[in-house]
Length: 321
Length: 244
Image (cartoon, rainbow over all chains, first blue to last red; front, side, top):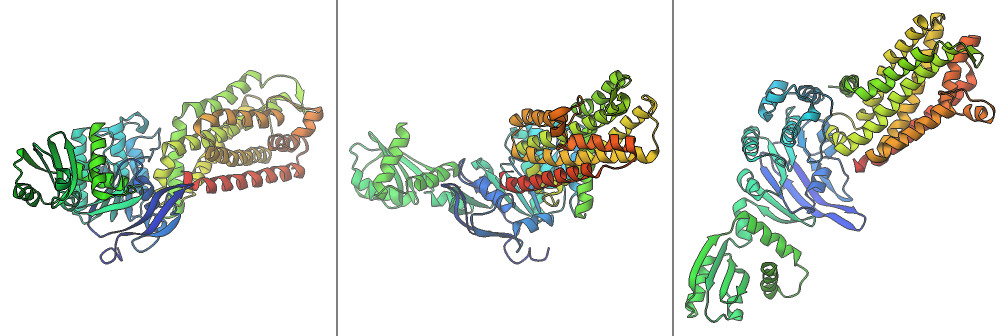
């Protein structure tokens, strides 16, 4: 536990991974600090799994460097300081759950009692069943048990609650919170935004292999334009609406105006001050999901030339589909 | 935990699994026993030896080699696809422990298999040999298991589960047929057989029985194959590291 209190637990230094012509990860820079719970959020193919694979020494970065507890990932993992659960991690068939957990615990330098681990992962009820006879959700919980079978400082989970039903998922996060409460650092990849919002105290949004946003859930929502506003307007004046303060995006359908704004008060006052009298005014908070969509959509159309009109047209195209 | 004890723990789990695997038990244990019980008492002579000798060595080798192929090639390929190898790489075990444990498990399970066949030969076939000859015969079959385990590791890392089955079948039949394990080979085929490890392993056994000496040409051929397949396995495993 030599350097866990001081330096970052994990650092990516300008890390890229290239597969032929495709850049799966493109110049990723980030630090994880001790005790943080961090969600890695991104659409499919964003580079989440590739990033985690490189972190877990399963793949080598094409360029750049990853450090874990101040050493290279392979040695950090072989010292047992990391407990990891992969989406693509398989289990050894033909053995019972207890035999498998015991095996993995016996491979760890600081194993936890097998019964404790199984209880924590909620798999003690089917400990004597054969691994190859389990359901998807049960298998997922066994994978989790393997990740926490030994004492570790960093837990890395790739899409941990896939294949779990709602109740199991709730239970999973309750157990996870207990694990993290002991001072562990947690990094998990997910595409469930709700999960990132509730469980993480820091969210990393990645798309096309690049880090787009890094902040608390509240900051991420704010960054994308925290409020959504809509109203009806008799005579729509597009150039005026585009000049509104705080405007993030604009969508016009006949007389219905929908706006994403960083500052809903300022935006609304500007509309009123200009002499407009909109009707059916609605202002609502943007959920993390919309924030996430806004951030990644902004990135996806980053190649187009003019900024504000491009918002309007892109939003239009999306809503027309 | 040292990496040695970790590897042994994994090998132990592999042995537990294999003992529960019906396919393995059938092809490696039941089939050679049944075939020997059915045919072992034939009165003909083969390679200058009563059939009961010759067929015993054949069946013991067949069981051992089919175990080496099934356990390593088919399972490695499947476990590569299922992600068990990835999962293991997240533990403290060194990267190569998986393969080492597999081979240890195969070779360890071969010991009782060969012993059962030898006992069968002794008490059912009525083959009476001094103990050192039994040991020499068992040892040569054991080395053969190592050769085919190495080849099977290479195939398991190289092929996906769909193509591994037919390929293993072809390779297995190639070495066992041309090596004279199913029926004796002679003439041009016999010349060809002299280059195969399978033929040489049975030759080791028969020469020990016939002449009471170890044929060094056979040892040389076997050592060459062993080195070649270990090299191939090492190369394939190293190349597959990123694709796991």
